[in-house]
Structure formats: C-alpha cells, structure tokens
Amino acid sequence: MRHDEWVRRDAAVVWHGFTQMAAYAENRPVVVERAEGRELIDVEGRRYLDAISSLWVTTLGHCVPELDDAVRAQLARGAHTTMLGNGNRTVVELSEALARVVPVDDPHFLYASDGACAVEQALKIAWQFWVNRGEPRRTFLAFGGAYHGDTIGALSLGDGGFGTEIFDPLRFAVLRAPGFDDPACFDVAASMVAAHAGELAAVVVEPLVQGAAGMRVADPADLARLGEACRAHGVLLVCDEVATGFGRTGTLFASQQCGLRPDLLCLGKGLTAGYLAMSATVASGPVFDAFLGEDLGPRTLYHGHSYGGNALAAAVALRHLELIEAWDVLANVRERSAELRGLLDDRVAPHPAVREVRLCGLMGGVELAPPREGLRWGRRVCAAAVDRGVLLRPLGDVVVLVPPLTVTSREVHRIVDVLAAAIDETAGTP
Ligand SMILES: Cc1ncc(COP(=O)(O)O)c(C=O)c1O
Image 1 (spheres, rainbow, N blue to C red):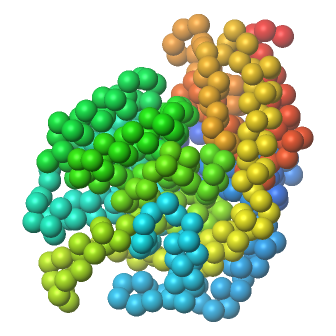
Image 2 (cartoon, protein in one colour; image 1 turned 45 degrees about the vertical axis):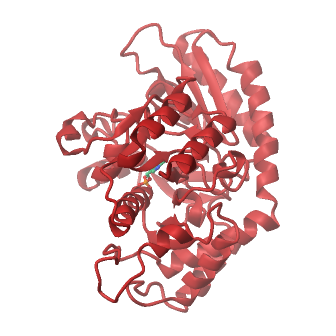
Image 3 (cartoon, protein in one colour; image 1 turned 180 degrees about the vertical axis):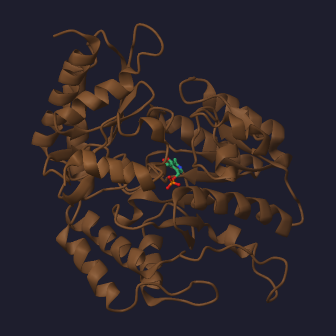
C-alpha cells in the first residue's frame, strides 16, 4: 500500500498530538513501518535519520538487541503487576540501580508513565509535604518559557504559549521569574525566593536547558546559586530532568553539572531508552519521611497510576542504565556535541537566515531569522530536511537538533549538511 493511502487511513482514525489534523496530510507526515538503529523506515521503504530521537526519548537507538532481549526476558516473567501496596522484583532492582546514580539524597521513586505525570506528582508531593509538616504553603515559583507537560498542573507551571491560552482559567497561578533568555533571571528568581520564602512550596526548574522554550541554555553557576537560595530559605527545589536526564547534556543528569541536589527530581523520556512509557518522581529522604505516619492516615500520599512501575519498562530501564556505562555513552555525547558545535558554528550560524545557534550536549536549537512573521520557516526548513532523509521537527522558528546519544560522526556531518541545504532552500539562497 502506498504512503498516501496510509496517511488517509491514519488521518481517518488517529488524532495526533500537537497537530492540526486538517493540515496533517498536506504536511507530508512520515508514516513509520519499522525502525532500525538511528533510522526510521517508512511504509514505502524510505529511510530517515531520526535526528529528534522520536521527540527526545530515544537514547541508544531503535531495536537495540540488548534492550530487546531485556524486554523479552521480562515478558516471560510478567508484563505488569500493580505497585499500589505491592512490589515487583524488577522495579526494586531498577530503583536500587537508579538510587546509585541520581543526584538526590536517600532517594525514593514514585513511578508514572509520562513526564507530565512525574511533574504532577512532584507538585502534589511538594504541596502535601508542607501540609504534613503543619505549615501549608500556597504557591510555586517557575520560570518564563518553562514547559513541564500538558496536564493542568504541569500547564500551570509552564509559561503557556503553544496555543494553550484557552486553558488559562483552569491554570493555577504561580510566581514567575523571567526565562533563561534574560541573563538576570536567576538573580530575580533568588530574590523572589527570599521575598516569598514562607509561602513557596517549591521552585521548579529545568536544569541547564529550557527545552521546549527553544533550547535556551543557562550557566551552571547560576543554577547553583538558585539551589543555594532554596536551601538558605527552606524552599523545596524540584528539578525537571524529563528532557535533560539520562545523558542528554553530557552528564547523566544536568543537575550534576550545576552541583544541584534537588529535593524532588522528575525523570521521563530517556529513562527507558525511548522503549516504553515510564516516568518517575524521585523524592529525597527528608521529603519522603514527612509522609510517614499511621496506616491509612492523612500523611499518606493518595496518588498512584495504574501503570506506574510497569515491569517491562523497568526491565528495559535497568538494562539501559548498564549499557550507558558499558558503552561509555556519555563520552560519545561530549565528543559528538563538540563536533556538532564546530560544524554549526562554521556552516549554520553565519547564515543570514539564522539568528542564533544554541547547544548543550546533544540538545540543540537553531533559531531562524525570518524576514517577517507568518512565513513558517521552522516548518519549511524541517520539511526540506525530511525530503533529504533527516527527520527534524521545529519549535516555532527554532529547528531542534536532538539526535540519539549514540549518533556517529558521519551522522552529525549529515545532519548539518542537510540542515544547511534546507535553510538555503527555504531562505532562497542557493
Ligand atoms: C522539561 C519537560 N518536562 C516535562 C515534559 C512532559 O513530558 P511528557 O511529554 O512525557 O508528558 C517535557 C516534554 O517535552 C519536558 O521537556
């Protein structure tokens, strides 16, 4: 069956996220039949380099034999058993392995399925932490440009945009510091923490890189100062590492580069190497302890998702952690990042159609400079890249570059070649 026929069947029954379905078919979507290594293969056999890691989740690649084996082995032991009031051996083993590497003191793991759920859990835990201590607090502090997911709580923390204004009446108010594009944002945030300490349940931040804001990169020293302000004023720090976790920024967690030890840490996306839906909220020992009390008593966290702690996901996440170390994946991230930086600086940044290039590890954004609004350059550059066999997806007029962490030097060159050609084509310079 041809591509067009698959698109027709798709559009007839599937509702795609963040997608205007009336325009879905016109935008020439890729309909994947299978994936292999770092490539996706569509229903007509065309291959695409997955330079967005399937929306930032794929770390080692697709169909990695070692990860496939881990899923198969767990399948034979049961795909899922509930974590509500009961345990599962694979989940215990995963949690022990994660406990050795997360930048959280005496960590405890509450699992869910998607990043937004991990953030919701962090909000509820932070809120109830203060209630359990008998000192309720009324608000949170978040940053301009923040994105923490699409559920209502996560949306409230987020700075809006993406057409979400219609939900404003449902969003609860938070204190908002400026975004990472303002060099003073951390000083302002630190003084807001000092001024509102008694009413702030937590500060929530994407450490090092604000991803959905268009890959805005911060100085680790600034984040360290924010962490100190939270500690000094007794405000909980929540680090949302849904996007930055598991090696994306060149260390296993971005918080490590900033010297941060958050009270709550949100994990998702790369946790299972991009294989299965799993996220986690990691609570420090002191936060966890505030919930201990009598059985069925009011200090209990009454929260839990049906598929939280899914055993198949846990098995692949556990194997993933081992492979990151065994394959020295972080070294590859750092080397390919330096290479990508050099190529972008030479070939892309000087282009008159480019406003700025931002990169941290293998999280990159190329901000285009369209001469006027409404030209949809981001979408058009990405479409031109897809025509050339490299799958890219924009955030507005920022072309996002988030290749798998095992990307090779040749593939990095190919991404930049294709991106440069796509920009030339779109901006009209041959
Ligand atoms: C920093 C951050 N937090 C949370 C989320 C939401 O994750 P999910 O899409 O898995 O719900 C995202 C998604 O891009 C993210 O970048």
